[in-house]
Amino acid sequence: MKAIGYTRVSTSDQAMEGVSLDNQRKRIGAYCQYKDFELAELIEDAGISGGINKARGGFISLLDRIEQGDVGVIILYSLERLSRDMLTLLALERLLDEYDVELHTIEGQIDTSTPDGFMSFAMRAFLGEMERRQVKYRTKKAMEHKKANGEVVGTVPFGYLREGKELIRDLDEQAIIEIANELYERDTRLVDIVRSLNDQGKRTRTGRLWTPTQVKRLITDYQGCFKKLNTRLSIATRRFIEAIA
Image: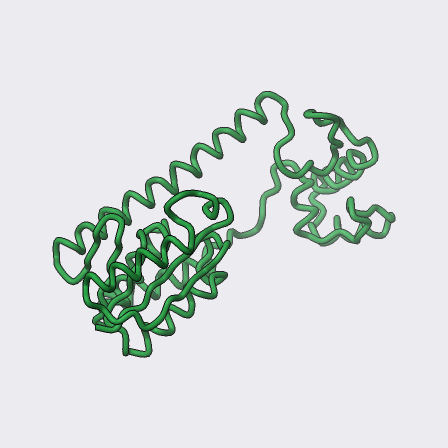
């Protein structure tokens, strides 16, 4: 059976034992010999995070090769090399099923050619998603803790200056914020607030003209006219759900 191997390391993974590209290649080669697979190609993403699929050239090439219809099995060192996003993994497995392609992993011994193998795949996809969300949650809580203790986190907000680990008020920028809020309290339209600031020679921190999006951030408790619900991701997800049913 013709096989394609896929390897990936993120920047932080490169120095870690067990997941280097060279180690993954060797393990995939040995697995193919053991299973009597013909390793036709090795596709890799070097130094790229698994977070954004379209940014991984190797991952996109892997999808292209699957759609060509001449591959029987995809081999990975571990499922995490592919993604920790459960939706990505489940969608990919459905694509592989459509093209009658098996997914094998060396670590965890996943083999989607059997029902038990698919269950193992689904459980690991779930655990990977749980780990991803735990990391996101811990990061969020750590940032909230720093903010609560007065530490500067991320970009310094407009109206303030960084002084060590603390923020101090920037009087010039605070004056611009006051103007924007006063106009808003008079029921001035957002577009007119923008025009007023620009006409008065008030500029952003980078010296550019104000835009509606930037001015919204200056206004306390800004209430928009509508909420954008149909994002590109939500639309694509809806179409995906309709297509697989």
